[in-house]
Length: 279
Length: 186
Ligand code: SF4
Image 1 (cartoon, chains in turn brown, cyan):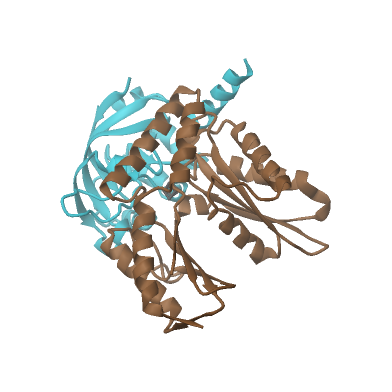
Image 2 (cartoon, each protein chain N blue to C red):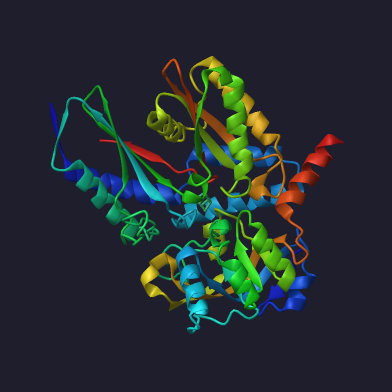
């Protein structure tokens, strides 16, 4: 059994909050520059150039890429042979509090969804725990903006809708979102599980590097097909028309009930941020 | 070629802009998001004083990050505009001439734009670091308690914008996509 002080999490979470918000992951930078090279619509090229300029400025000056520095989604993969002393949630929230304050990040969380008073320090984090084998804790911080979160949808399809129904739904969600989620976007898809599990799969799909395809060749092919269909919509960067509507489609799946085919589409923008560290 | 525009944005200047135009905007713009819009419209209905005179004003839908030492403002890109749809027609009727945001607008806003000769600009969503460089000064003028959502007076220089919906109701979100798809057919 390995002993870890909960307070050790604070330091890591704080650092990850700041770094994730200021430095766009390399895979996203690669997708955007590839898209720019493949784009042939003049207005779209201009916007992609500005997007590249923007993340370069943020990177060089360590300022937030986007003013929506998001709600802090924090994923903890906790090794079964680790014992954490102290409150994990408190330690993570303290890290978010310090990171958002010291990093000059925007505080965008309200305490209550209907009464809407800002908590003032961007806490609480959205916390997700997974138990995994081993002696380590893997921490991922993913600040999630709501321009794109608001365009996400989930649908309980029928088994008879099949893969065609799933494809149609996914493409329609992107088309309906149009310019709102700051295209070019990243599309996280969850297929299977239960209502709640399916949504989580879609969120986790967004945590996967866009350098990696689904390990199952069937789903890797589906990712490629969906990306092509989405980019044939013509929405384009910022919705002004063009080839580049999405940069990647990531699918995660889970077993499901004989009666169901849940499909969740979690949309993320060209500022898809996540950073991990192992403790 | 981008068109240089200075505030105040008069009806004459607004009507000269066409959907798809690239604009570099300089002068004064006011920031307001959901919570501030709600208060402004409530103040208007109650006949109370407003944080700024809407006449020929340009409102930027933005909630910036806190400024680092030495910065006028933190990252400052647009937020999604449809959340302001409930409030915009009333403000446009009071003379507000320009809106800066990103994303679609509802039919009532488009109607108000046409009726009063206003204009809806798109700024690049997600380009907050780049856009902040165009902001020379920023000052909170109302609703300080709203934090990032407070109303600020900004002085901007050459803020890069695109005319999305012009005073005739032409909409780049529709025409841009159609033009691209039509060109691809050929
Ligand atoms: S959708 Fe993404 S890029 Fe757009 S404003 Fe929100 S966080 Fe920023």
